[in-house]
Length: 182
Image 1 (cartoon, rainbow, N blue to C red):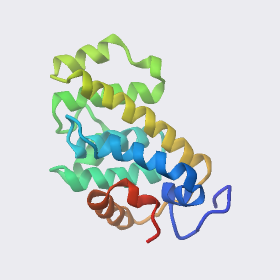
Image 2 (cartoon, rainbow, N blue to C red):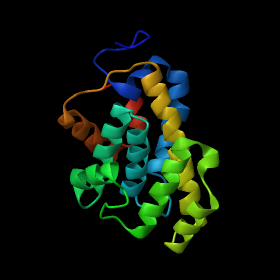
Image 3 (tube, helix red, strand yellow):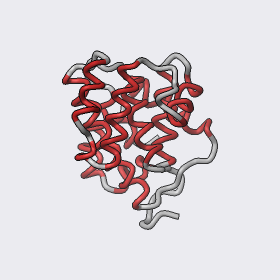
Image 4 (cartoon, one colour):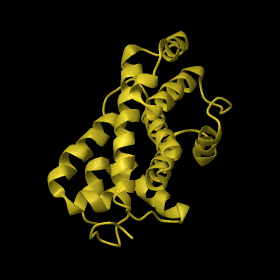
């Protein structure tokens, strides 16, 4: 049960966006820019970074919803997402994405955990400064989103099909739709 009065029929972050519409716009716009806006990383990979950080943070709602979004946009689908969550180093993703996931994991532990070795590994694998920047920002933002969602004890569906349905909507309509009534 949530720590504050939320709509029991709306899980996770969308319940918080509806509770406080004044913050919904900026939070949704940030997610839209990071995960769907113009950028050198494919949308599916950006969603995978968000899902991975959320998994590391133990945020079931965000790991599941963004995992479903990544699965809907990447070859390999949910199997790939699960492989990355279990062991990104052994997952069948590019060396560049493995290095970026390493940066994301360092950010999740703490911003100062990102070291020269992380950046060098990413650059050696072909990552650009913009890709490195975007990875750090996605990871940092999802630490905030995860703490927001879990800090207020929002609900999280048990059924994976619920997340697949959310992903269909997000992939098509974007993050502005997350705060809109259904």
